[in-house]
Image (cartoon, rainbow, N blue to C red):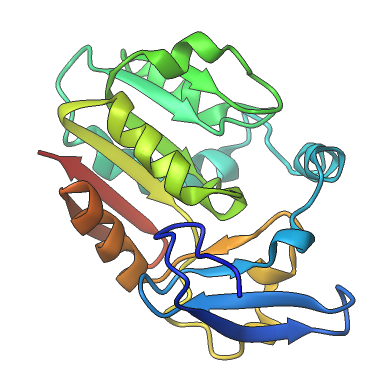
Length: 215
């Protein structure tokens, strides 16, 4: 049995086996934090990941894409003071949200393990961090969320956009889990677990958006 890659317990059980599309790909459900995650042997290699991300429509000037990102950015901006410093974590090849935030007067850095790999930005602290459609790609979410905590200033905010498992009627038919680069799937219970672990407060904005507040 594999350790949960979020809470690191050995309290996971097999949730679903995909014998059709992914040749025996196993999904585990952690009975502690409720994360669903794929087995270690099914994690995609970097070449597969990068090719997949390059196929996404990340045009920074696409109004529909901007409207999509605004679902997280609008409630986040209401919490910020003028001139707040931020980090777009997992900005991708077309950092539209970075441009939106910069145009609004915020000082924003970006990091992406494939497209913006300047490590120095991970050694700084920020008033806010945004992570849109990225957390589902985390191979080791325990490490990523601990890093967020280190980078957030006291009273800082972390906004996460990722599709939750709560309202999924049939996991096997869920488009989100069919993406080979999606390897970690969160429920509202998972987000509450993260908040309790990190001593954060959590607000649920929509069915795919949370904003954490660091004490």
